[in-house]
Image (cartoon, rainbow, N blue to C red; front, side, top):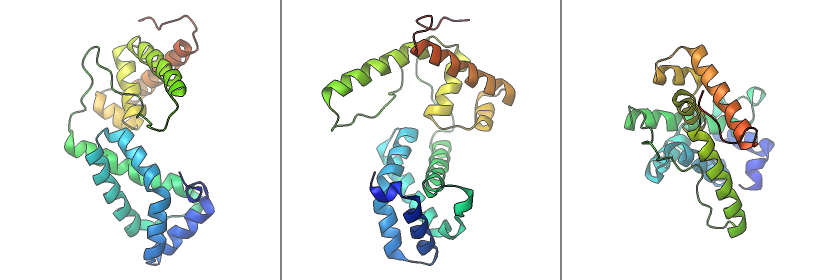
Length: 196
């Protein structure tokens, strides 16, 4: 992520300029934020071609709607990430009307490989991912599915309630309990999560 991405003031200036039709500012914003937004889209969509399509749509929306950005309502990168997230979720709904959950014993990848990562760091991270997978397997089905959809697919609580055909309060409870049990498991409190 470039230093411009980390500078909310600079991003706010670029968005204001884009709102006035400044193509050069748009190119600078793309250069500053496209890799960050692409990474977010790739994590949600899990397919490079879909993430590329969503990124293009996302920047078209940014070009069209940049004048609506209000700094008082949130950081510019948050606003940009929200546009990307909604575009990814729209694309998922269009291309995958039914959420495909992994088969028994098959877990989705929890991170994307970083080719520049140190092998020792990679091994340590790999152990953490293995522990997370073990802890995820120990959750009740509803808890595991709600946590995956909320944090891996980016669903809101309302979207979870619709997807899981359950009351909003129940879904919130599944997420809260699932996260609590994951935290306990990962911290080693009681070892592997046991089924209730």
